[in-house]
Amino acid sequence: MALPYPVIDPVLVNIGPLPIRWYALAYISGILLGWRYILDLMKTERLWGGRRPQLTALQLDDLILWITLGIILGGRMGHVLFYTPQIILADPLEILMVWHGGMSFHGGTLGVFIATLVFAVRSRLDLYQLGDLICAASPLGLLFGRLANFIKPELWGRVTEVPWAMVFPGAGPLPRHPSQLYEAALEGLVLFLILRWGTHGARLLQKRGVIAGLFFLGYGLIRVALENVREPDEGMPDFPLGLTMGMILSLPMILGGSWLIWRGLREEIPATGHGPA
Image (cartoon, rainbow, N blue to C red; front, side):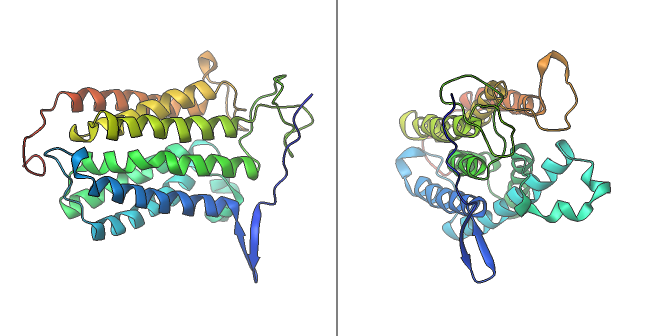
């Protein structure tokens, strides 16, 4: 016996001919809450020791725009290249139709990294500190994004007999794991609490790159684990060792996150000043 799927209209409200979708609202809410959370981190001096970031509130406003473009462009292109490369030739206009769904977290992460790197170089800011700030707030966006996946619905789980399984519209008659909710809880809430402990409990913002490393490592491990209950994307080949595309794309995050943590913990905390010269 499966739980009933709570069918929710993917359109929250129509303003004239313009539909406001939960999917778009999730992205907007995540970005706005992330912006506010980063601002609060920047203003809390006790978290930084002698390494308070030089990023100003005005620069943060500009950075959020760069991040937004990185999420949208990177997320969409990542989905196309990693999961649906066939549409490049079959229907290239579909690449632009982001409202149809199809955004890759790993592609969005790469897009945000490139946008942040360019912004840091242009503004002469510390890339590690920018990465720590962005990653500390990223689980907020993941939480809303996974809930939007559930509402749509898309990215459902594998067939199962657990008592909380659901029959998703468009996924056939068999009950499945509500893997979107697992991801919202672990990638969103749990990972946010871990990073919150890192920023406010362990004061790891004083060690450049460690918070970013915790995010990449934590997300990578969670994603690899949950891929075992998430339905593999349609059209994917049979990878060796039971791997999925999500697992493969998460492995560099695990390795990179581990290196960032190792590197950052070796840094000495300066007694005064805003950071390394």
